[in-house]
Length: 289
Image (cartoon, rainbow, N blue to C red):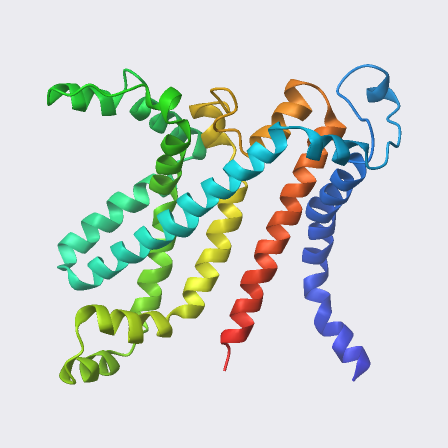
């Protein structure tokens, strides 16, 4: 029995080795480098020295890190938890109650932004929110005058852009979840006099709560790692007003050449991802019968 058990594990060995090589190894190196003074150039590039917690002490005493951490929380909460999650659910609900042609057209329009390469979507969002971009051109057509969105409201612009690009994933998840909701339960509630919002709150949402938790976990982790969209649109500016943790890690490591400090910021981001993932996994386990 023991030999058979080991034989069953053989097919997954290549996958485990690939994960160790391309996922865990870089993460382990990142944590190690965060305790050194590694740099892109100079003596520290040739021979990095162990500095212990110096990078972390500097990070928590530097004003740019608390600001970046706060902006990351706001960006993830507004763009993923409230933006993509709620908007994706609303679109999925509307698609289940609309005609097939309308549902197909809306689904295609929403998914189109998701299938675009991130760099293409980032430049499209930049062209839309730029001072002379599409949004201000439309406002001018109707007699209005818009501000320089990327300078005046940079965080709002990247939140809206990321919501636009990522809503399709939530929509697809909830579209599949709503398709599995038993119709007889909703019909029975309707016959008992339940209003639309009551059926949604007390029947539909409880039945798809596992899909909600799964979707929240995935889009939260995806949004935590968003870099290209922000870098193309604002590069973290102006005056760090849109500098999230991935942008700060990149700036410190590759713009200023301080690999040790940059990987320390990245390590905090990894820990945040692990914490969010653990919370959502626990919620999923608690929801199992």
